[in-house]
Figure (cartoon, rainbow, N blue to C red):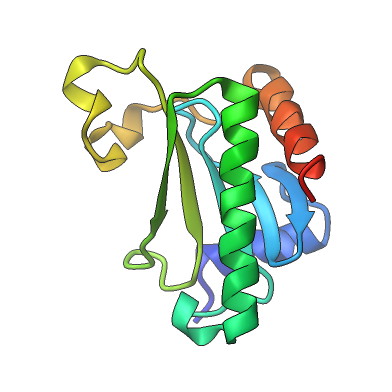
Length: 146
């Protein structure tokens, strides 16, 4: 099955994925298509596998370590209050980690809720002009940790 995750990893490999922040040991770090929480990023494994359970013990550790390093980099680059991590795979049945910065400035009715309560359809799309500098700060913070 060819998922969006497969397509994005393929585009990252050939240099045509505009959301790429960096390649890491376990795969690719990319900005989220939408940026309702500035700095929202994902970790995509390369090669793509169905779930975390399909990775070897060592590969699991590498993927989870890369996910945590990405969270550290986003904290540094954004000044967010905290990071939320999610591995779902229900809509896109391929392993990928959502890494969400959470801010004190979020609306009261959403600040303590899961990010899925946001209106994703109305969220601003990633824009090179708007989020490019933030992507570059995340990249620099991540590279310093690798």
